[in-house]
Structure formats: C-alpha cells, structure tokens
Length: 262
Image (cartoon, rainbow, N blue to C red; front, side):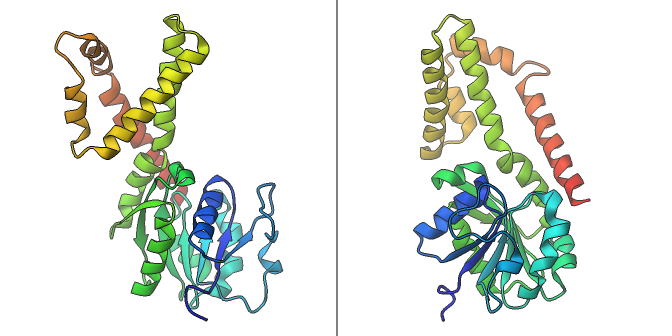
C-alpha cells in the first residue's frame, strides 16, 4: 500500500472538517470520519473504538473544538509513530497535544479559514518536533486541497494567524452586514441593499486577489480627492476609527487564542 492509498482519519466533521473532507475526496483520497454529532456523513463512526483494529491512517486530522482536546486526543495515541497528526484546533499548542498523544507523536498545527468551503481558504501551518519531510509534504498536500498554504517555524506566530485569517472572514461578513443595514437606512429596498452590499464586498475581494497592487494602493485609486469615497474614509479613518478598532479586535482575538492554549 502506498502512502496515497492509506486513508486519512478525520476526527470531527463540522463546517471546517466537512470542507476538508470534501476537498480530499475531490483529490481522490480515502477518508474515514469519526463524528458522533448530527453532521456525521454517511459511513462515519461515532467513536474511535468503532474504528478497525488494524487501521493505520496516513494522517489523523483533528477538527474538533479546542475545549474538547483533553478528552478526545488521548484515544488516538495508538497511531503515534505510524501516522502524522494534523490539528486545526485554535489555540491548542503542539506541546500540549504531544502530551496527550505521546512522545513519539509527530504533530502539525494548522489554522485554515472558512473560505476553504469553496477551496479559497488560506492555511498557515507549523511543524512540531519529529515531523519528517514526508509528513510535512503530506500535510501540505492535504491543506492545499482547500486553498493556499504557508508555513511558519515559530509556533508563537499562530496566535496572530488565528486572529487575522482564522477569524478574518467574520470581519468581512460583518462589513457586508453593516453595509446592507446602512443601505437600507438610506432608503434602498431590502433586496437591493443586500445585492449591493454583498456584491461590492465580493467583487472588491476578487479584485484584490487578482491585482498585484497592495490594498492601500487600490484604496487610493478609488478615492478621488474631495469625492464621496474620501468623505466616507474621513469618518472610517478618523481617531478611534477603523485603524484603531481593527488593531484592537485582532489583538483581542490573538489574546483569546493564547488563553485557549491554557
């Protein structure tokens, strides 16, 4: 059996776990799922005890809530030394996971984000002690099935990654939500307000992705001196406006990521 023929064991199949599973199936990987909840796909088992005794997955992927790590991970320690562990749990450090999985465990910590559901996610990963080049390459391939991947050597940077990209889609959705509400307050009918807000956010994001220019240059290009955009940005960029609030928000998210490591 080749490495590609060995199945991927996915523990947890909520929104992010489901996105991962779909990407792997599209890539031709065999996937086994442990999921006791209502999101369980066909063929999933409710607990690790229901897995085949001779199972040796290529990777065991933890896509459960970080608060559940302490009661879940130890049941998978039997795969240490034979499988690489890939975690997408926010805040759970490699050291804490290895304490539960055993000294032989090779752990990769990663943080994908919700656009993974449409294969436009961005994931940053960090390899722990004992992770071989082949393990890292496998995890890289698994994560590329849902979007773009980057790697860091300093695990401490994962808190900032979580705050920016992991939580970031919620900030964008909030922007669309607030723009829609403001459009309605200006008198636009609800359906039109939603259309304008959502397509503006989506289109601007697509332009940013396609452009080689940085975000500041694109912002300046659409801002005519003395025009309507300049009037709006004068409010958003004023003292205690967006620059300060976004920095505070990301700092709060990073602090919470560190607290979850607790």
